[in-house]
Image (tube, rainbow, N blue to C red; front, side, top):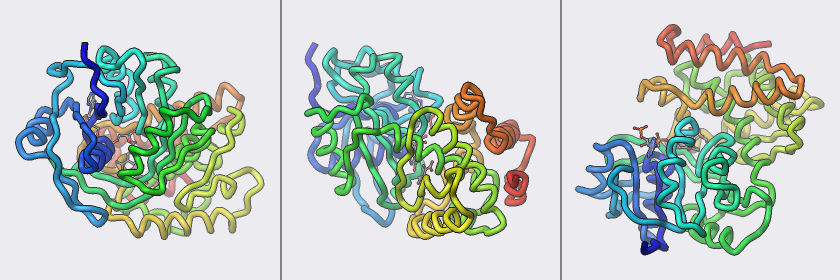
Length: 338
Ligand SMILES: NC(=O)C1=CN([C@@H]2O[C@H](COP(=O)(O)OP(=O)(O)OC[C@H]3O[C@@H](n4cnc5c(N)ncnc54)[C@H](OP(=O)(O)O)[C@@H]3O)[C@@H](O)[C@H]2O)C=CC1
Ligand SMILES: CC(C)(CO)C(=O)C(=O)O
């Protein structure tokens, strides 16, 4: 079977669509796969459009439903929500060359799941913090520029990592590589806990983080993630205002407040006002990634004897909203106070 040396983007939504469009604009052969038939048809018929303050352009690229796809690729970028990782990894496996790789462009600890399906040697990790929204079939809003970090899961600096880095720099010129991708993924889990809290209400990310009465809740949530990360032997890294040390056991309230203020400043500059989690609940009306991002931290904490009551409360409230038993309301966040 002929092997395609371009990039297969599996999950052409906010993140996959953005990355794929920038690579396509740079002349890379990009193929999109998505389970949303309307989105696939729109890309086929009219191309994929990027809007927003960072860039406005359209690209033409082949797009397929998983059942229609034929061929094998050396590079597959997996960009589905974390809870769809296992099924997507199974579906893409026949299309991955024996010497190919799957790059996870996701939140959560998806690299472990992917490695379980395609093998650790064919898995590469990434952390992305730019904000993008799927607006409708064939259209994605890119809200801002932000940290992009790539790393082999075993920390080696390899030629294929350098190639991926060069590709991702078509989207984010300041993208970097790391020997410790897990430190960024856990940092994002800490920040992500604050984004799940934002999704309980109606205020956007910046306005939510700017509520001074919620600082103890933010310290509690991010602090629990940092404690579990430490028990896992990971030292989380900071990015775009999130300072993991500000939520460590010895951190003062002032230190945390400075990091929260920096996150407020950063998010004020984004045209993506609300988290993807909030969009899942309020706009897309579907389940969130809570079981793939918050619950695994609680479970890992329990294995280390670390209780995470704030995260447990948060997960319970997100579940209640998913079931339609609790409305989105800014007052929900007060229940996260210690
Ligand atoms: N959006 C953002 O700003 C950011 C997102 N992330 C992370 O990136 C990851 C992707 O999120 P995002 O791009 O926002 O999500 P989206 O829902 O916008 O995109 C995912 C796309 O994949 C499709 N899909 C679902 N299952 C499969 C499957 N088995 N095979 C092929 N396609 C599938 C979805 O279809 P359908 O909608 O029908 O399910 C959707 O079109 C998540 O882990 C998220 O947390 C990280 C940083 C920022
Ligand atoms: C808010 C954002 C874009 C991180 O900055 C995110 O990760 C999300 O929406 O889930």
